[in-house]
Length: 230
Ligand code: T5A
Image: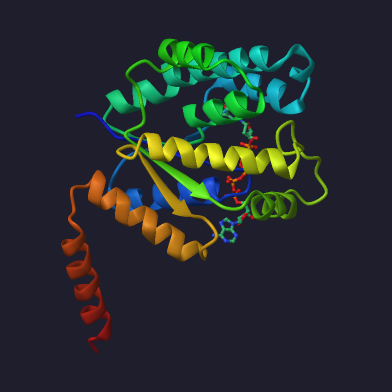
């Protein structure tokens, strides 16, 4: 049996890490083996490349070189972490993946789409995510959240871009969702945490666990009746 591959995408501070972890916990409670991972990173080689990219030392080399570095990290991550886990029947939940490259390097870096798609073919091939959540929040909200969480730490290479650029990237994520509605689900990340996680859970149950919305309503009703019992 092969596992399922889910990714979380969106702007800075949109709640990806929070909701990837919440979903992983819910699936574990169902007895499902989970690998929770992230990009850039998620494997030994990719974590080294993450450090290089996010420190900003590769920025002067240009957006194409940064794109190639992201691709090198992804290649290691897919080969050594994602593919083996899926082959073992585990579910993989990844915090950022190809859509981040399409948006950050494609829109912010203005890297040619042909290079991005070519690198995607080499690094990802058929290993596409089956379900992608885009957590949508206005750029200013996400950046403020990221800043609060960071405290006195320094903004990384991409977080330090202007709000206007982050808003352009937000629109680009939404445009991707329109192009691939079967794979991508947009969730309003401004909603309270528990509301966001319920929406994500409902989509996973419906799309990957094969539980129809009616069954979900019934199960909720059963729980309500049980908890009301003395
Ligand atoms: N990048 C990455 C590229 O340019 N190209 C690529 O191909 C890839 C893969 C990675 C950077 O690399 C770039 C994009 C990024 O700039 P990172 O350090 O991994 O950087 O950072 P991000 O992925 O941007 O993650 P963040 O940690 O900034 O944001 P998250 O994960 O979206 O947000 P999260 O969950 O940490 O939440 C942020 C704060 O908000 C709160 C949380 O508690 C937390 O304090 N929060 C909420 N508050 C209110 N309501 C809710 N619903 C909330 N949900 C979370």
